[in-house]
Image (cartoon, rainbow, N blue to C red; front, top):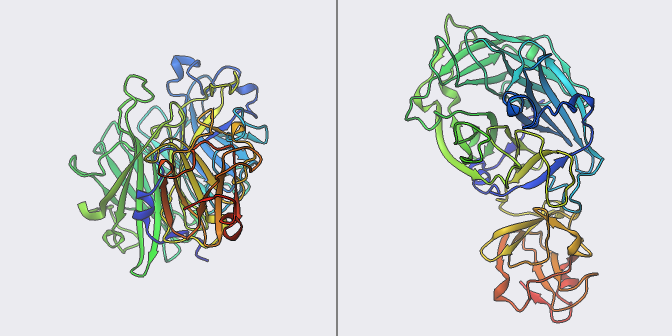
Length: 480
């Protein structure tokens, strides 16, 4: 069975990803192992070589890799389960919208030791219930290992490692092909011997499962001028299905500053989109040596820059592209270390992550797919409060709702997409009262509004979804 998730237009959704993300924090579940301040800047050498390395989402879980080279070395997989969030479909939104302190229902549920020798895991990837993770150690060898995460709370390492004797492995991307076999790409940008500094090694499985074994069929060596010549922390394959057929894309994530995190040089968190020319891969199952892929194997299509919101994410710590079952592209990025929230978020360090979602859809017909972005400044800038579907739309008192650690009570511009027959209503006072109310009518398409151009004050105390027939009948309503 083909379990691949397809987007109708990868480039359009990539271009529409929010530049600012929704904050996700986890405080609970850190056991006695973390009393030595591991995964913080207060650990040995300021946290050097002991930080988060990659991230992926599966259902309502986040899987995060981390390195621990001190004492009893270990490559870690940290499993976070966010029970306040839906499993699928769609983006989660912030779990800090109604509280500055993460709830106990969102917690670290497993601190899983992947390996004790290869202590440095990089950017991982997921195909169905299998996680593929690159592992490195101090020498110039690496291992690609596979974990069964069908029960994400209890990962199981499989016995199908790929051993790489003279090559590093900083990030992996894996996907199923149309014929059922698996395509695995392994990125290295730090080899010490033999290989060029930057190379992408391409493997193909003999069958539909990782147990069938992999063969390296090709290598891609980007020239310095090639747009793929970057130091990637994470890679992800993304499929497109349109009237023209199926096509494969590869997204690479990095921070443009060489050394991260660096307060003096924060760099730019950037994702790069490339279209993959699958026809360039050799057809033979086995060959004496891997083929060298042409320059056109990866064709640059676009790039997107993301905000860090302070120390809430860094794409040199880890990022991933997630495609949900409703054909929406979502990006997650984690910060290097556990850190305090600030702004009344308590004294305990927390796991920090941002969620960026695509907002480009030709039309929406279901309220579950509807969304409203409220901005505190004109021109769709400033702090943003995201309303996702019906689950977060009803707010009785906005003084109790937070965006970036502060109450959100003023809206100066709006961008939204709601189905026909549904409207989002902003009221000047709490308890869905006061007037004039601002009615955002759903048309199925994306609409924008500068609130200063209306008679609505911009200050609001409550909001909710209503049938359009009810909303437009409100006394003195401002209808858009």
